Figure 1: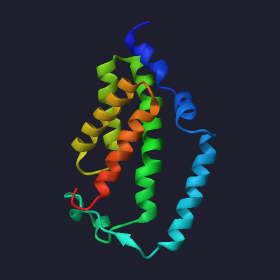
Figure 2: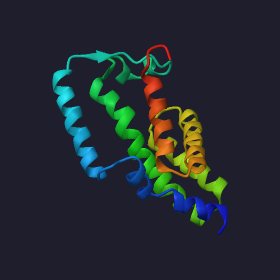
Figure 3: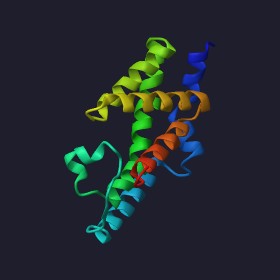
Length: 158
């Protein structure tokens, strides 16, 4: 079995459920959604300002970001995006092309789907996430790195 086919077998949703989530994913998502909704009701007026150098130029950054949006950015977005990009899309592309082309195209699609003006940082981040997913052979490896990056991006002055 060649290397790319072997990697596909390791990058599956079963690994994520088995290793990261002790219960079913919909249960965890529902619990997180309820927790975020509860937190949003109590912290609606509390916002903190993002300090990323690119953000002051973006209209949505004028008033900061809510706790629920920050929680979604750190918890849910990495799980959803990495599941779609590294668990579903990357193995699909590896089967139809070769490993470098699959990583390139999945990273390009990731950067476009993030919808930002500057695609290069998202493209480079996606290359790192793909590398981590392929090296760890676990779906949650890239999710943890992605979540960590999103968390660091929210720290003032980082």
